[in-house]
Amino acid sequence: MRIDGAWLLCDDQVVRPLIIGEILTDNGSWESAEFLVDTGADRTVFSAPILNKLGLRSIASHEQVSGLGGVVKSVVVETQIRLTRENAGKAIFRGQYAAVTELESLDISVLGRYITGLFSVIVDRLGDMVCLLGQRHGYRIEQN
Image 1: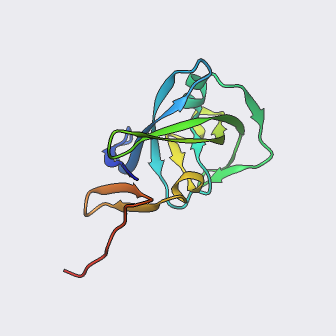
Image 2: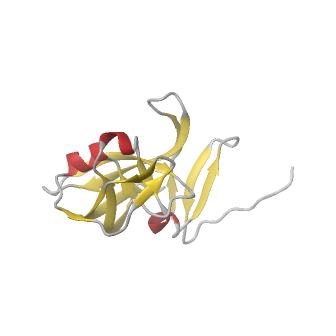
């Protein structure tokens, strides 16, 4: 399985590794979402604007979400994330995901190790590649 992302220009004019995915909403439709491919993120976390669009029932989180800005308020939602594979098929990840509740807490949703840990993750700025590789796909590092 191969899931491709891209280096995209964000609102703050910084280019970051992103994968465009979809999240299942409370009414059964799929909401498009950008995910930062963060190789250091322990978990997948939805931004507050995405949380608001999903309309999902949330439960209080007993785990804290923290980063460079410190600890932020968060909740947990149960839903599905859908990412497009190389053959236009879909990979679906079901689970409980953290979401921040304050707009200023997180600019973009983060794809963390709950999902990225299932893949070989390539985040290569010079090679202009963002990619998740699994199952029958692999990679080789060669000296030029």
